Length: 142
Image (cartoon, rainbow, N blue to C red; front, side, top):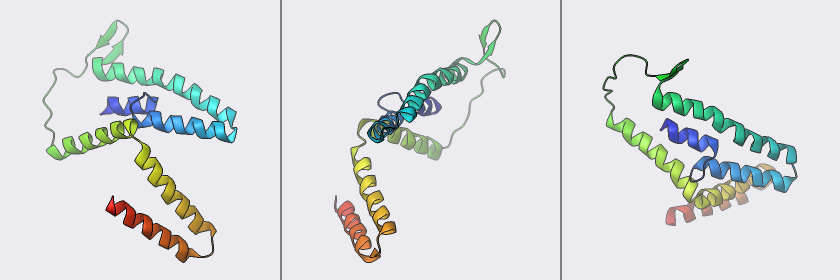
């Protein structure tokens, strides 16, 4: 799970982190914030190198002057509860599902955010609440 989360943070395709970085870069280009786009791209190049050190430590152990050695003595068996396995599997599947097919989340979140922003900015809150209730009815019927 840690490895998948680090891959997502690095922006590897087929993870939710890649989609997030893609939309952040697209929004920066649309807004003309080139310095922000360049900083995000530079961060996307530098951070995976740092994550690689975590991967090596995670899979091979700690680094010594002569190479990588396992520390802590013999491995012991760790008992994990089934709820932990299910919750980690659920989070991993969400990371991968949003990386493969992010469109429903993006569409629904943009609809909800536009309704919330219009509710905050307009004076007739009843109209916006009616829009939100129609969205809620639509999402329950789908």
